[in-house]
Length: 223
Image (tube, rainbow, N blue to C red):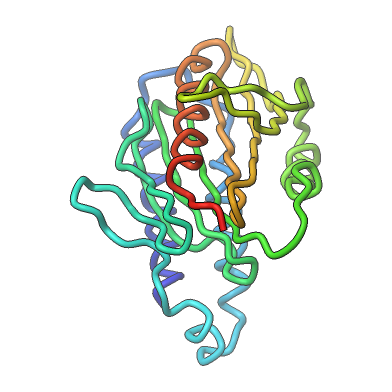
């Protein structure tokens, strides 16, 4: 039952974090994307036979590091305790059937960053891979405001990733947005979702995105 424990704890972290962090105008009521996904999966796996569930979820994809990071053993990617203004809240399995694991982060109230690591078994198309996320966003009223390849100012060389941004709500002077990004490294796909307020959080959103993909390029060995 380890996976359910991880998912339940992640929900506790998100709710506790939102109660404690009230340093900005409240975001329209909308739980972070990873929490919505995990809650749906909790409902689903609760219907499975105990033996089948234990067989699928008895391993932890992450190991602890001395500096507080979480090493994703299969890919080599490290989810550090902090990425700029973002603090790590939880790690675990996002979708065992697809070999997808996640790291969840948050900054000030209403700002979330999620990293998903998926083993690639065949060809990869960035838009097709994110199509379920796009459909969910649009079903909730999200309006697409940007789409296409973006060049990140990373070292030692710039890095191109696919991105799409939706505007999800407006409140006072803020435009609440959800940015989706993905790129392939060896036989792994790194997908990032950042939920933030523009223009208030644009700087830390850019910093998080650059840091994630610079690390992925350095840490995930080509295979």
